[in-house]
Image (cartoon, one colour):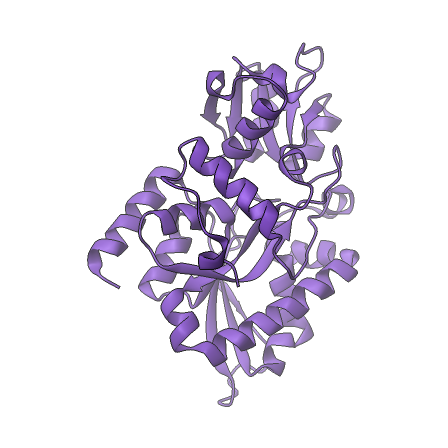
Length: 328
């Protein structure tokens, strides 16, 4: 890819954070992980960039279960503390595939980078009040619904990304003015304290920090993912379009193994909670209580369109994306 394209995505990553939001750990484990069969010359080494969050549990489980080895792949899972290195890592070739939230990849695509999803990653549970993320207000707040967020200060982990895009959408859907909201950046681990100290009127928080905020007296006034669409996919695994075309066989193998991993994770929630403890610092008690995302193979194209149209409407993207250009 041309150098100017790499520079463009690096700039986008710096400005937008390009982070894959999700049920996160406060810090990265660092380094990477190799699949069973390491050193076997018959296996093709494949590097995958991920963030140490609950959403990425399926790839670690699939690696442990041997799904990638069965496809002739030796995984090299590279964890990063944030998403800023993910898209540039794929573009530069440091990662063969990587995990990111949908909006981050849509923004990169909007900037002219030819990227494509090859597998789903994580989706909303579809249940209000029992989702992996939500907008929380402190005890005694007059805010009781999404529309009441109009004119208020709301924290998100990154500006111009999936948090503020979905929140604006549900505010407008409820009859409020989405343009009157003041969004500020607050990292998820710091959001409960920001609420308690009244630095913000409301905070968008994901698990496991969402459960902590509620336990401390906070109230969820909007399950923004669910309210935008109960079938919303939040993140996925992607690569360069050149890889999909030029390495179709490898891409197919990775996708099949990843799909098996997603199905396995959905059917074995306790194993998800257990393996999260191997690559994050989330303690056992917290892992036992936190709400897990839904893991599924198929992307929901209607929900994707709803998200893409909203991102274009609110200025995160210059135009609405075409699902056919991005989804498997």
